[in-house]
Image 1 (tube, rainbow, N blue to C red):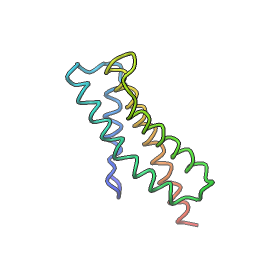
Image 2: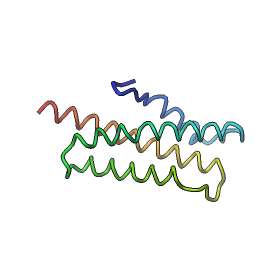
Image 3: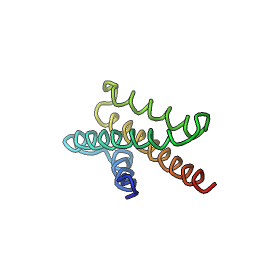
Length: 115
């Protein structure tokens, strides 16, 4: 875990459960969706806070905030075709994208502090 309490390994493991090709059982998929939604809700404010530390025109900041916007849209979206398994996959992809941006923003912050 890092300083802000984001357990990246756990989030990525949860995402892998939805994307590993072995669909969870019907009871498990509902719990997995709730877990993924929780991860996303934890990541969004952390990414926004890290992004605000970078200059306004910084590409990494813009990409991260766009990903946050997409994450919010996915959280609000109704289930489409494919049912709960597809929903879990979509949320898992959002988790992976947010973790990527979180790591990029952390690295950019370290670079900024060291200059």
